[in-house]
Length: 423
Image (cartoon, rainbow, N blue to C red):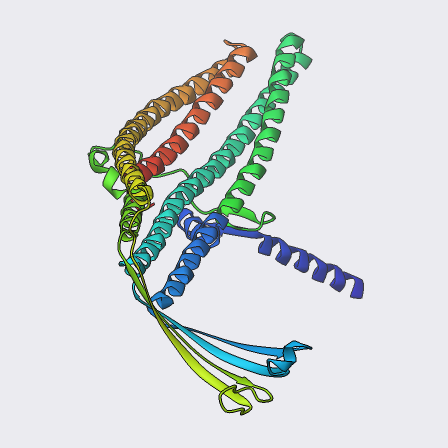
């Protein structure tokens, strides 16, 4: 009795472990998981936090800086006849920038722009990741449906092989009819094995994209169903301004313009204040009255005015101006390329819709062809080879429908990405 109970508990444990290892997941859930767990997006978020930390560091650039130090000394002979033999001297140094030609303000603006650039890079990465999630998701769906189709096709071949074997045993057909089906059945077995291996790799690819452990058995909650209509909108004509690539390039150009202003600020004077207070403790440290304590302070104002640098600063400004012009050209070219990409995605999606319509017609014809050949084979008016060819056409037609529907789903995702719509 105890042995039976232990066996039951072991089975329940294994079933629970198997259930934990499986995860039913919709496309929307897969995309949401990718947004929070994908390693590329995690890296993008760390870059944003790093830029924010750098911006916080710049906040103190216009504040006074205070440094403290303590110096201990011991003087040997013969200097100890002129100086105190030993002592301790603490000091405090204060620095304050009064005017820096606008560099501090521009530096803060540049740091803010850096944060914006990293945020746009994250948006761009999100767009790419979400598109890759959809491709990986529908690839798993495609392979899963191909396995189902391959299993059905294998069953058809096995049924035909049984019928032909019975006919051969009855002396009604030659053995080459059986061999022909056996060859096709072996190929079907091999293709089914390849498809199962492909499903494993497709699931691993999806797991990596959405940040799930590779040992999780993903089960798709969505299938390749729904409407597959051609598009009639013209969003692709205005796609460029919605794309993160354009926003990123614009932010980068604004950063270049701030850099130009920073370089121009080098032509302006800078004014700074330095104040220092110190004290020294030691035997007869104060040379004025012989006390053991000497204290004093020091104040300095510095004014730096650029006079002549033989065109070095002007050359840097001119160089930066050309970089800005190059950035503007890159923005224009990217707009053109995005427009081409969006229009191509529009055409590809409509082609996929037309392919589905034609493929579904082919499936109807293949179904009817297979039915007629099965009926005629039963009546003895066609051979097993005719049925085999009809089954092969049926399998190919159904495979083409699966390919066309998955192509539509991926083309739809590519179109949305191309026009900058949320995935």
